[in-house]
Length: 415
Image (cartoon, rainbow, N blue to C red):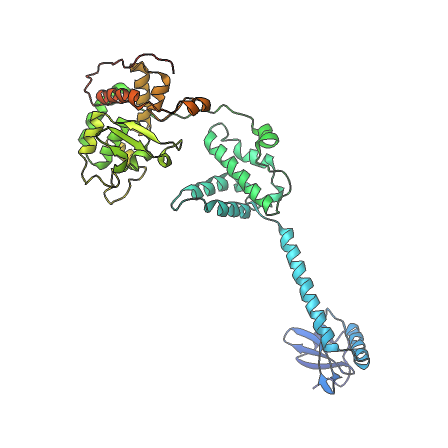
């Protein structure tokens, strides 16, 4: 039951559960820990009890004033329920606009921009591609100190500070990281979260802080070509398809990806040629590989019906990129003494010291083309006929058929 005497402001904190009269038709409802104002009015001949807000946001004096104003509107014929609905809708819209503005004001962290940029790049990566893991590793490593910082406030100085210790020691890693930083900030700018220039730009941003460096090419460990015959004997004793694949890779001087993906329909055993398609070549141009007698014999000795992949892994499909390296480890060849890719260097050194062919033809044996774009526009041959005797000489040397003799093939010609 309502209290007989109107309550005062000082009594409100101590009131118990129930409905307490504050004025004519005005009540304070106490329920649990909440206290709210109700007013009793007549609307369209019916009793209605609209709320006027919660105490202490609405004081007793404010509640009395609202009650009077409400009765005056009803007396004047104002559609009070409709007016209250409109006000609630306006308040809801205003709150939504405030929330949107608050979200926009929060900006975007570097981590959020990184995730967004990776999401964009992911669409162009093939399934199983390692790029996403590499992106995350470099960006989280070098961006560790500002992952939660607003992307709009990150400076070139912060990026340079993160990179400086490795800038000269890990040139390739740092270059890739800078490129990934650049894409992250470009994404943030496109999303409207950064208006300042890209802090990962080189000129005028990172260049003054890190400076240019002379790039050092890290050479793969390789065996001297004189040591190849002894190595070949050990490789022959190893056995297995992976060892055969490495032997073929050595004889042809190709990259591992080219050998692993080799298909029988790319090979012409009669013409002693293997044509590697452009999509598997580093330079995205088809490459004709002259096959030596040893390479032909190796191919003919492989099991299978000469369909599909030439070198099939034990469980089917293509070998992994570590299969040939695993062969070297089984042979107890230290990682610092030789690498699969390093055999290309052994071949190139042999060609340089033991043949007198032109530089251009020697480089073509490794699918390197030293000709300019203008020269390539007119000279479109990759000289397989001139490369064939060079690859045969290499195979004879590797397999021990030349008995250690140094051969001099070709005549000096203008490139």
